Figure (cartoon, rainbow, N blue to C red):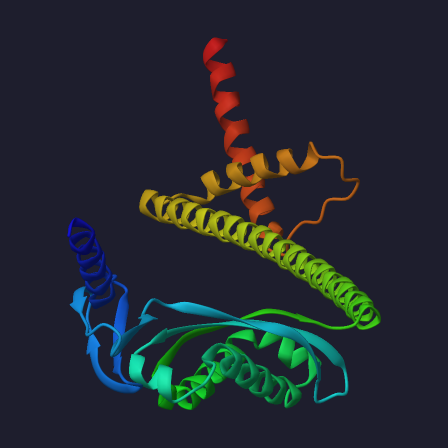
Length: 296
């Protein structure tokens, strides 16, 4: 009798273990009854009918498909090695289970085919510099194609686009020549700019010196003009006589005679002034004769 109880307990435990299922937080459970889809179970403890129902768990987390490397011929007939990775997440566990037999294989082949088409429509240089464009276009194509499979392609990243060794070496030589050409152009432009700045500086310096000399001459001329006007005004205000003018003229002649010149040119008006000098001489002679008589 005890044996029967033990056997019954074991059978009940087995049946209970078959009917109680745990679905993880990142999973969805697809429950089938006698091979027909019945319902979708969320995370937590789920009860099913043992032997009549079974459950398939679908991972809802973001996953990655590694696209194997493949040889692709570019638009300019260069063979390059291309591979990529595709990130996707399941949006409908029912579709991803029943609409496609093997989603990983299907996504891999789809990515390879479209990647071959995209790179084949580009030249080598364009394909090497258009990674972001290829990523965007491939993601859009895969997202549209896998929508009926209940998945969403979130990102596509090219891992490498590798041309042949001889093409890579030629590209390196081309880039080196281009850098040397740019360096020579920049050096020539620098020398040109330096010469221009130097010439502009010299021209500016000459202009400054000319302006300074001009200002100096103008200042001297203005000073002499003001001095002449002042002297001329003072002379007229003092009402000078011919005798005073003659004396000043003699002082001027004395200064002229003190110079190194061997010739002295007298102005045309000097004859009148010399006549005044003769008159001054007579006056001085008479004055000196009177003084001598007084002393006697």
